[in-house]
Image 1 (tube, helix red, strand yellow):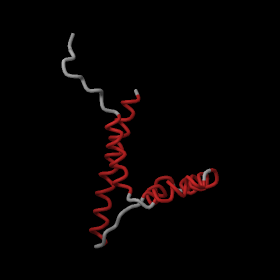
Image 2 (spheres, helix red, strand yellow):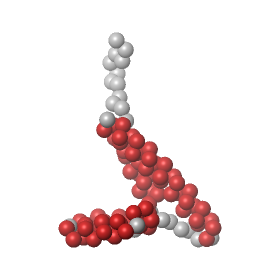
Image 3 (cartoon, one colour):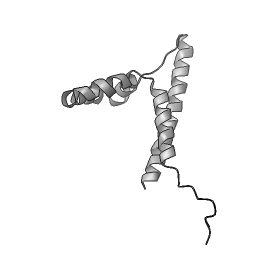
Image 4 (cartoon, helix red, strand yellow):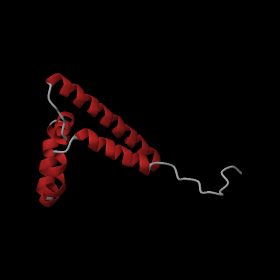
Length: 106
């Protein structure tokens, strides 16, 4: 069940990463400049008011964690992060390999 969930989320993130690349590419062509969506832009577009409350909650409870992980992560481009996370989840969710000399059929 966990393997299925990891593969499903991996494929979903992989698709979201490709959609992000296409969106950024179309926006770059239309504006005649390089336009890249950051994680904070995507989070504010998807979560609206909850993104700010999530940031405030993390800053309130663990300010060092926000400074170390949260703030630098929000300025990175969203599409490559989604692609990498999707690939990692697909790698985690792959079925175990059959060893050499192991019978797979009874």
